[in-house]
Length: 187
Image (cartoon, rainbow, N blue to C red; front, side, top):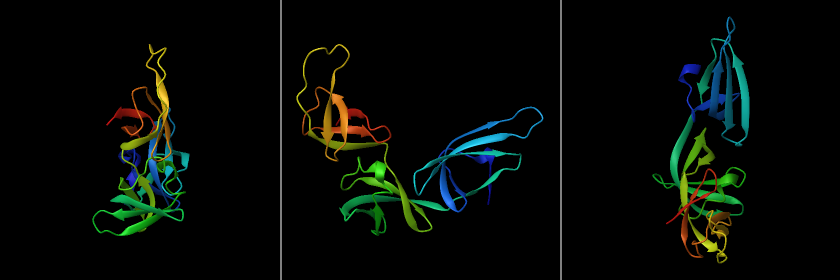
């Protein structure tokens, strides 16, 4: 089965040169009396590397990658490997720190994630959009010029340091956006 350019969507998994890629962005342009040119930005699901590719012609087609997404829960870390348990089958899957490097700042035990499998091996994970994390260190806020909404830095239980409002104290639980790493609200 192949997919034409018209069926392409963001987030769709495509196989290029035997590697699974996810479509990040795509754009098509056509000039008079010339074949259309397609610029597509892909993210490699194994490495996370973003690649820009350009295709031209009327008959460009892609092969969908045989990726599977399964709901899993982070259970523990041992010797640089992070173990996830499938929520339905209770199978455990180890992943190296290289595979989940960007998610390490947001993962605590029992965090629910989506594992991405290619050829029955976990290759990546998709984090939820927001996570709730506990503030472990937050210096007291300094009152002063608060006309613009003063903020301070706080360290979360994963070691991530984010900017929070002055009213957030040590021991509070905050909601953090996993895409940008920004404070959203206090829970």
